[in-house]
Image (tube, rainbow, N blue to C red; front, side, top):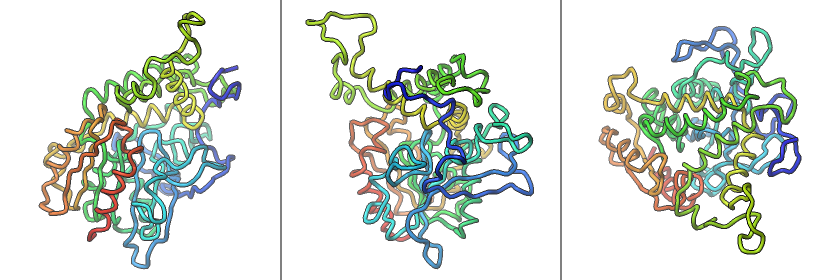
Length: 394
C-alpha cells in the first residue's frame, strides 16, 4: 500500500474526474458531434466536452462576461469551497466573488477546464468514441490555440460574442494572449499575468525534467494505466514531476524563511541521523506531490505540458511582433518581481509588443517574494490592479 501524506488512503490510477463522480458546480458543453474538431497539429477530435463553471449573471446585452483561464494543473473550479466533485477550494478564491476584484455582482465569470485536461473536459483519460476505451496516448497533441478555439465555441453556446475581459496567469496567460491575437474583436480587454509570448528554453527544460520522471515510472505503462488498481498507477512519477515544478514556483528566500534547514523527523543532537531523515522542505514537496496525484491525470500532465512548450504566439504568423500587432484590446500585463520561472522581463516583453496605442495599456510588477505562485498567493496586490483596470471603460 502506498504511504502518503494521507496515510494509507489508496491513490487512484488516475486522478481524472469521471462522470460517475459528483459533478459539483461543473456544467458541460458538447461540440464536434456532427463533424470533427480539427487541431492545429493535424489531429481531430469528435464528440468533445468542455467542463466549465460560472459565477454571477449574464446581463441582457451579454456585455459583462469575464473569462478566467487556468494554469497547468488548474481546472474550472476557480472559486468556491471544496465539496462533492471539487476536492480543493477554488484556486483563485481570493479574487473571484461578490465584492472581490473580479466582482460577481458586476460580471458574469466563466472558467473552463482546458482541452486535454482531466476535470470534465475531453482529454487522454476520456473515452475515445470509436471504442469507448480511454484515449491514453491515442489522444492527439493539442496546443494553446486549440484550447482557445474550444473556449470560443463555449462562448458561442453561452451567447457571448465579446468578452468584457480575458484574464489568466501562467498557462492561463498564454490563453489570454492567444485570445487577443486570434479573436481581437471578441475581447474587450486582456490581462496576461506571469506568462510569456513564447516558451523559453529554460521553461521547456524544467518541464522536460519533470515529464521524464513521470515517463520513467514503470507503472505509467506507455500511458495505458487506466485499468490499474488503486496504488498501481504512475503516482510516483507524477508526484516527482510535481515536486520538481513546485521548486520552480517558489523562491530561495521563501523556502529559507519557511523551512530553513530544519529536520522534520529527527534531531541531530538528540537522536542522531539516518539516511532517510527528511528536512521539512522535503515534507512540503511530498505534500504537494501527494495532493496532485489525487486530482490529476498523468497523461493530461504530459499533454498540457507539451502545449505549454509549444506556446509561441509568433508561430506561423511571421514572428512575435507581427502576431502581437493583431491585439486591439487594452491590456494590463502583470509580472511578479521574484518569479524565476516566468521572469518579469518576459511580461515587460509582452507589454512592449502591444502596440495598439491604447492609453490604458499598463505593465505592473507586483513586489512579492512568493515567486511564480505570487499570481495565486499575492491576491491583495494582484486584485487591486485587476479591480482598477476592470472598472475602467470596456
